[in-house]
Length: 472
Image 1 (cartoon, rainbow, N blue to C red):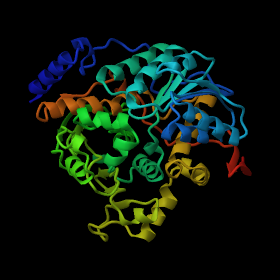
Image 2 (image 1 turned 90 degrees about the vertical axis):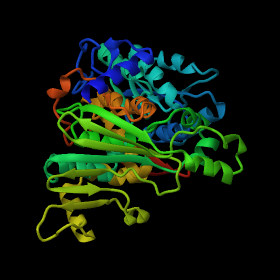
Image 3 (image 1 turned 45 degrees about the horizontal axis):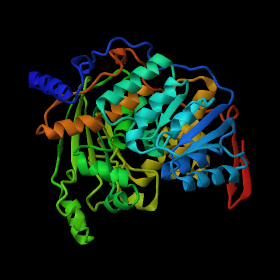
C-alpha cells in the first residue's frame, strides 16, 4: 500500500509537469529561514494596499478603516464602480482617498511596487498565489483570501518566497477566529478532550445559483475540477488543534466524490439547458487525511445539494468531543455547538444549556473576552473577520509571529489540488508535502494568544454617516 502511494504521488507530479525534486516527499532543498515563529521588524504604522474590492474586499476596506495605526494607501480592482465603492467606504470612516489602480488584469503589480507594508488580497482564487508572491518579492507582507494557492507548485512558491524574502504570507482563514472554534482550541490546549484521535471539518453551503450569477469565476472552477475546491474553512481550525506544522504533520490523504446529481437537477429546475449535459464535479467530496502522530481528519465539500450550512468542526478525544454543526441552536444564532465530556454520571449525551454556559465561562478564548463584543459591533461573519484583521495588524505592529504562517497557508490549501488528483485516480492515496521540511518536529504549538487594546486602538465607527463611538 505504501509503495503504491509513493508511486502514484510521483507519477501524478510528473504528469503535472513537476520534477521529482519538487515532489510531496519534500525534496525542495533546505529552507532559507524557518517562518514558523518568525518575527518581522515592528511597524509603527502599517501602510496597506487592498486588491480586489468585491464582496470580500469591500468588507476588508470597512474593517481595516476602523483600525488606527493603519493607512489605506491604495485600492486596486478592474472595475471602476468597485473602486468608487471602496473610496466611499474610506471617506465614510474619515480617511483620505486612496490611490486607485485599474485598467488591466495586472494593475496590481503597480500597486505592489508602491511604498507599502502589507498587500491584502481579495481576488479570485487563481490570482491569490501570483499576487502574494509578487508582493513578497517587492518587500511587502502578504495576506490572501482562501485558498492561498490552487496547485502544489504554487504552494511551494509561496513557502520559498516567504522564506527567501523574510516576509509574512498569511492566508486569511477567518474560521480560525470564530468564537466556538477559538473556545475549543483553548479547551484542547488545556487537555479537556484528552488525547485527540479524530477531527472533521467541511464547507457545506448550497451555492449553485450564487456561483452561476454572482461569482462566475468560481462557477467555472466547479465546472472543470472534481475534488475539494474549498478545503480551508473546515481544515484550518482543526489543523491548529492537531498542531499541524507545529509538532505534528499531515502524512497522506485519499479523496472520493459522489455523482453530480444536484447540479443537473438544478439546471433542469431552473431551465438552464446549457448546463444539462455539463460534466460538473461530484456533489459531495470526502477527503480523509492521516497525520504523522496517528490522528485522522475528514474534510467534506458540497456546494450543490439543498442542505443546511455546515463546517462540522468536530474534535474527538479520549475524554470527550465537541461538534458545532448541525445544531438546532444555530438557528437562533447562538455561539455554542455541542460538547460531550467523559463522565460516568452523564453517559453518552451532549451537555445541556446550563452546562454549556459553564464551559463558556471557564474556557472562552482570551481574544473573545478581550474584543468579542467589539468584533460583533464591527462585524464580518459575526465578528470573526474583524478579530482576524485586528490580530494580523497587531502582530505586524508589534513584531510578533503570526498565528497563521506560510506553512499553514500551503498545507491547508494543498488539499485543493491533491484531492483532484486522488479523485482522478479512483481514490488513490497520496503523500502530502511537508512544507516545513522537517521543522514541524520542533516548531512549538500555537499558543493561546490575546491582544492589548491599550497598544492598538480602534478608531471611529460610523452608522449612516454619523459618528457613534470611539473605542479605546
